[in-house]
Amino acid sequence: MIKATELTEILEEKILVLDGAMGTVIQRHEVAEDRFRGERFAAHPRDLKGNNDLLCLTQPKLIKGIHTAFLHAGADIIETNTFNATRIAQADYGLESIVRELNQTAARIAHEAVADYRATTGCAAPRLVAGVLGPTNRTASISPDVNDPSLRNVDFETLRAAYYEACEGLLAGGVDLLMIETVFDTLNAKAALFAVMQMKEARQLDTPVMVSGTITDASGRTLSGQTAEAFWVSLMHGELLSIGLNCALGAADMLPHIKLLDKNATCMISAHPNAGLPNEFGEYDQSPAEMAEQVRPFLSEGHVNVIGGCCGTTPAHIEALKKLADEYSPRPLSDVAKKQFAAVGA
Image 1 (cartoon, rainbow, N blue to C red):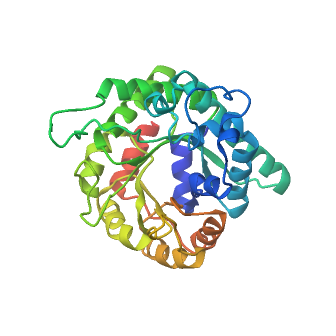
Image 2 (image 1 turned 135 degrees about the vertical axis):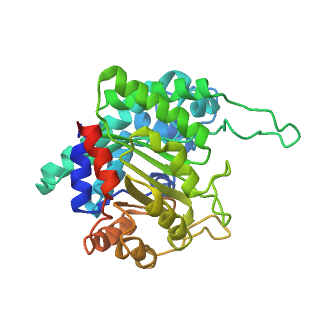
């Protein structure tokens, strides 16, 4: 496991490339219901197709192959296939009991992919595994019923406990860092961050933590109503390695909000936009070359330290982003941020 201070030093020297969309590549494999079930869940009473996290248990070779493809495309950081691997999200499938196993197995598969990649290529540079903590399918800040604004379908403690359980599995699997991603509700993210901070304190860990939110539309706000600047202020207490944005927007629409983070944040900045916007069929048409050109200002203007892809991005997109990242230097930390990191390291 890499220390936050060590990873900070790497990010000061080069732009790291995050992988692309696990879900997009899984969809291209057209995985049928029986493959989601495998032998172990053949008699499970609920439909399981679409539970991509479950494939870590039933189709581990498929998941490992996707990780491997992203590594060969140039990804420095690969994300565990655990976007919905919380007790809250898995309740939709009646699989709450396997959450810890899902997270631990997902981390192990990703590390196996890294080990095989190193053995095959002789690569000596760091290749890191980020343990993903997704947003869940519930929101602590917004009512699910327009007729009852005070209603909530989840509370802070339930979220905290769910994230803590997922963290236990990810850390048992040996992840190098943790990523709280696709944040649409900052209160959900606070619960995740609190769980992570509790875990780190209890185990005396220095695990780096990345947080990535999602600006939902042209309003420039998250679903819970925050601007990118407010999003940073709400989470800046968390001793973050980085803060950034992913999903919902393509690179061109995301850029103004990344600039706001760049202006305000005293930690590293990450961005993994979609491959443009979906067409009328929900598919992403932006080619790797087109996406790279839209991403170029993120790098040429010095706004980011980590770049990657979200919905619609394949290994080909990541390969194009890797070539682009090699052309530019990372966003420098401000003097204030350097003092902050020095204090944490001490």
